[in-house]
Amino acid sequence: MPTMQLRDIDAYYEVHGSGEALVLLHGLGSSCRDWESQTPALSRKFCTIAPDLRGFGRTGKPPGPYSMQRFADDLVTLLDLLHIEKAHLAGYSMGGAVALQFANDYAARVKSLILINSPACCVPSDWRATLELYLRLGAARCLGVRTAGRLVARRRFPGADQAELRASFAERYAENDKQAYLAALNALVDWSMDRWMHAIDVPTLVIARSGGAGPPERRAALAAGMPNAVLQLVPEACQGPPYDRSGTFNSLMLDFYAACTEGGMRRWAS
View 1 (spheres, rainbow, N blue to C red):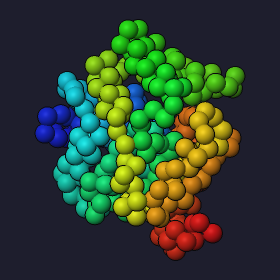
View 2: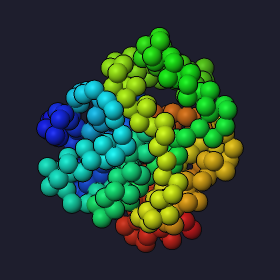
View 3: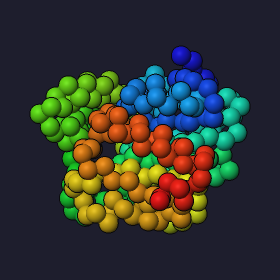
């Protein structure tokens, strides 16, 4: 698969299928491999473009600081070079934050959004969230990304039946460049879209787990703050989609895109 020069980095990306452009944005500490279980299904309907973001995977890893705005600028440069004027965007975790930033900065370039376990604000909401953030930063700084990856994997895939997912995720995390990982994590620490969400009015599907830590209103705030968004809770999914329960997840994505094409969000919401 190709790489492309984006200002100061060589960016790796994968393209599959044909049709309307669908950009798939991975999570923190990961790569375009986040979407391995989705690409075969989605590429039958779309031209899927899955980049490795700045600092991750096979893309260049320049020194920080990084920012959500820089990730969005990288993406618009990639789309320009690929001669793509407008695209659907789907983002998981940090990838959803990048998608939101892109939709804010380049609104005319976005057809729709899917945001999976993604925040509208990364500023910790309480002492537990603050503690978790600093434990994650401390683990990466002092113990390395391999140890940080094991901690994240245990949290995201806690089930006895998820041992294979847990091991695979941790091993991929260990491949991260420590300084690039910390630069991306620091870019998230003070990032917030709370003040601008209301201006993003493209059809949006927010997918979140119904259980887990944090108050329910925090998980619903992203959809509630956007005028054309629908929240879909997935009770059986842990913190690991799109890795886990990929069949359910793929169906949600394809149903949403069909609704956008055939009748807009009113049909989806009904």
